[in-house]
Structures are given as C-alpha cells and as structure tokens.
Length: 253
Image 1 (cartoon, one colour):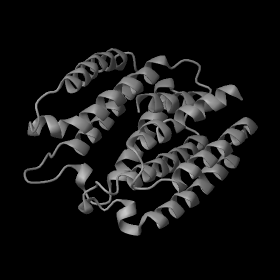
Image 2: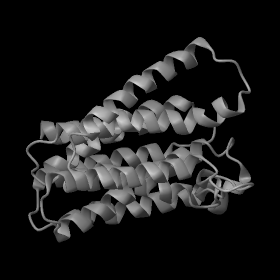
Image 3: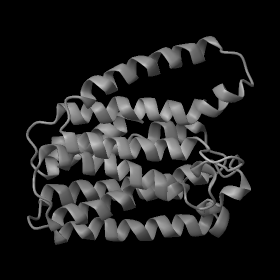
C-alpha cells in the first residue's frame, strides 16, 4: 500500500515536471503505512479482543518507526503542505474513530467509504506534491484530479467486490447496492473517461497514452476476474501493484 502511494506521488512529479520531491514522496510512503496500520488495527487494539501476538508486535514496532520518519519528513515540507497534510490526517482519524458518543466512525457511514478513500488518496498523491513544489495550479491539475479520483475509485471497487462476503451489509458498498455484475460494468465504463481525459491535456504525451492504455487493460482484467472467492493476495499483490506498474511502465517508456 505504501509503495502504491509512493508510486502515485512519483507519477504526479513526472506529469508536472517537478524535479525534486523526495520529502513529500517519502512522507506519503511512511504516512500511508502508519495510516493503513492504524485504520486496520485500531479497533482490534482498543477492543483488546485478542492478546498481542508476535506478528502484531512487529507491526506495531514497524508502524512506530514509520511514524518517526513521517515526523522527520513532515518538517521538510512547505508550511501550506503541512497544513493540508494535517487536514488529511484529520479525515483519516474521522474515518477510524467515533468522535461523537454512540455514533459510528466514518468508515461505517453507509455509502461514503469509497469516496473518503478516493479523496484522501487523490489529496495525498496529487495535491501534496503540487502544493509542496509551489507550481501554479493549471487546468491540467483539475483534469488529473478527476483522472486520479476515477483510478482510485475503480481500484476500490475491486476491493469491495473481494470483500463483499465479509463487509457489514449496513456499509452499503457499491457491490452491495447494485450487485457485482453492475459494479464491474460501472468500473469498466469509468475507465473510458479515465483514458480519454488524457487527450485534453495542454501538452499531449504519446508515451503516457500508451502506458495508460496498458493500465486500462490491466485494471479491466482484474475487475472482470474479481469475485468474493478470490484470495486476499488478489488485492494485496495484484490490485495494489497497479500504481507501481503504472509508474515503472512510464519510466521504461
């Protein structure tokens, strides 16, 4: 997950010709590790339903080290980037913790999970690098915002299909509301504007068109073959690797 976020930040830096950005890329990488582990294991730790196994202790130690590095890279960011980063941290906390008595956290708000996840990923991987580089915001930024949101949205659809058997029915995920078949159709349709939005850039990059076409084919295949019986490794190693492959393909081209 952290490598996926890192790859998307590097993609943004390539697309907008940002020469230096190690601090924001590393901040996103370690921040994703901390945020993901916090979201995943917070409820388990607070409920204290199971003892702290060796694996969880290792994860906790790794997350703590990542947290230290997040702080280190945070203070290398521009002030405005720090403020926006704190805003996305607040959204992550809202996603995880119930701030109001007897209320569910945002993760359990019916139908909004996928939008919160997509917004946070777009904000961190697109918004933060642009802000930190202090380059002007052009129409290309808004175009890439829509593209990136569609990409994350479709990838989350695959996760929701895989997790359909385990998700609480009250979550009202997309597959729960419209079914697996229609979710796949929706994801496939969304990949069309994702690809053709590239033609509206101020400077058309032919290599990017080729890479994006390969990406669309990959995602389409993962979407078509996704189902509730798939192993967790289908998303952990296949779907999560798509941003990494996207970045590597661009470097190769």
